[in-house]
Amino acid sequence: MKSGQKLLITGGAGYIGNELIKIVPKGIEIIVIDNFHIDTEHKRHVNDKLRKNRKLTLIDSNVSESHKYKELLEDIRIVVYMASLNSYRESNADPLMYLKENSTNLQIFLNTLGQYSPNIEKFILTSTRGVYGEGSYICNSCNNRFYPPLAEELKCTICSSLNVYPQKIKETDMTNPSSLYGITKKLQEDLLSMYCSENDIQLDIFRIFNVYGEDQGKYYSNIGIVPQIYEQIIKQGEMYLSGNGNITRDFVYVADVNSIILKSIFLKNKRRNNKEIYNLGSGQPISINDIAKVFETLGYSFKKNRLKNYEDIKYSVADNSKVIKDFNIKDFKSMFDFLANTYKKI
Image (cartoon, rainbow, N blue to C red):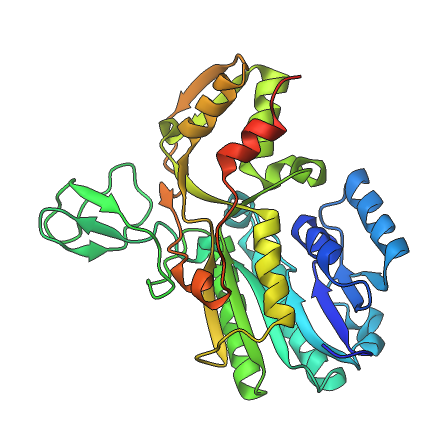
């Protein structure tokens, strides 16, 4: 980016957006549009502090309320689009709200950009692992690779064998969202793909896996698995093991996520196409039982409630070889090290 050009971050007042702003060079002018759908005292404090320390304009607005911000769009060159509602349970309970907030409002935003910001060079979309749903499995009996729906018992779609094993998710795998949230994020990808193609704008889509990091729970404990588990242990003396604790996720550190997004903003990575899709995860499979063991090792005493809950994806771990290669990533932070250092008893 050149002097006088602006960076626009929608949804930038949230946890990931705030952590990104902290590492953007201070000479860059940033416009943030955020409607504070999630609103906590800590979040307001962090955003007030950021505004005092750098060139940052924060517009308290939904992206659909273009009259509140359209005059600020003239010199925008790069847009990081983070604006989304992000609860899969809430999305299934209120699909119309999610379709409006995550999809329709994006199209309204794009229509506004077309009028007021003709010189955009690049879009970056923070998408989600949720577009994949359960991901792909291999049947060890007939070697069938298949994409199962959510179910208590996963069977091969050809031979009905139960001898099936999950695979790390590749960007080329079929999208198979199991929630309205995942569907709306895939719609965001498609809407932006069309807009950027029509306007010759580069597009990087990052399908982010489960983010963790310091102070995440101060924004809203329900946005991260780790803050939820810690809160259960401290306040209730118990922990809920959804899917009997075998549910496995790819946990990626917030600073690792944002270092890659920052490279996407400022560095010209080697591009094969005008649009690139990246899995942004650590590639390390960690189950809820694994997390429970860490807290036990750290000296926490709690009851483990084993719940048979099959309303969620059983296995979601990234094949991150593409993002590692294109952005020259050496390694990702270990979640086990983070837990040991952050939650150790004094």
